[in-house]
Image (cartoon, rainbow, N blue to C red):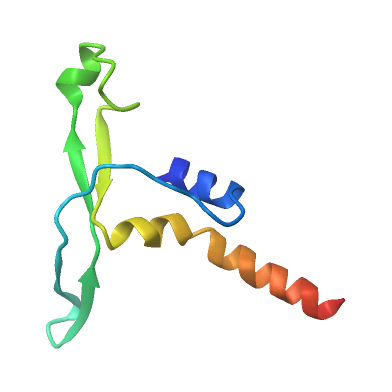
Length: 96
């Protein structure tokens, strides 16, 4: 996901990403106490590619464990770095 964030950060307006995605997951998780829950949506699945990785299969990922986002999780992770950068640019523009 760091690679996707870096690519997104370097692009100006358009960033086309082709990647595998997993099924969407939504629900509620207990968050500190049984009565206090938080909704969740968008997940990162962990895919074990150990066998392919250790057999030097060129189709395997860069590490034995790969992350695969759901459709909702993908834009959240790509935008994670861009949001603070946008705020910094707006603040700089106002100070000029």
